[in-house]
Image 1 (cartoon, rainbow, N blue to C red):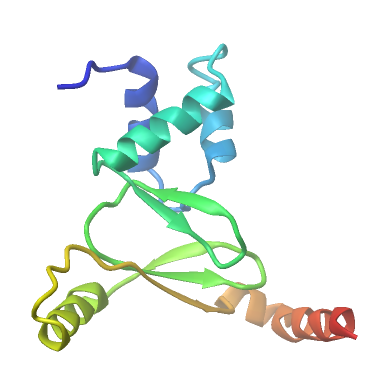
Image 2 (cartoon, rainbow, N blue to C red):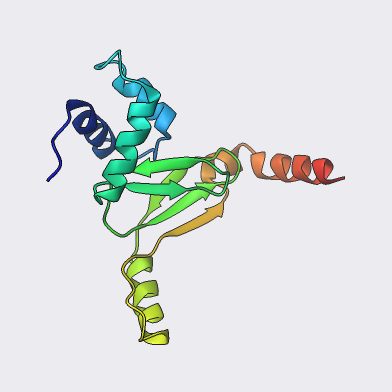
Amino acid sequence: MRKSSKQRDCIRDNLAHRTDHPTADMIFHDIRQEYPNVSLGTVYRNLALLEKLGEIQKLSCSDGAIRYDGNIHPHTHFQCRVCGRVYDLPGDYPERILREAQKAAPDKLFESCSVTFTGVCRECRDKGLETETANRMAENAM
C-alpha cells in the first residue's frame, strides 16, 4: 500500500473537479496556489503514479499534447484540431468496441479501450476557423 501525499491528493482532487482535460503544466499552475513550493517534476511524478494506480487517465492527443482526465470510467473523447480542446462524448463506444474486438479475437483478453475522435468543435466552426486552419496547413505543405 502506497503512503498518501497531500500534493498527490491535491492533484487528484484538481482533476476530479474539471472537465477540460488539462496538461501537467495547467495542473502545476493550479496547485501552486495551495502548494507554492511544488515542482513541475513532482506534478509529473504524481500524475504518472496516479495513472499507474488507475486513478486517472492519460490522454495522448493528436496534437502531441499529453492531457489528463479524472474520469476513469470508459468514455469517448473529441479533440478539436483547431483549438486543441478535448471534450467528453456521451455513448458507450468503448464498451461496444471492446465487445466486438473480443468476438473477433477470442484468444485475447481485452481490458480497456481508448477512443478519441478528431474534428472541429462548434465554436471554431462558428468562427470560420476550420477553413482558415486548413488553408494555412495547405500553404505550409507547399
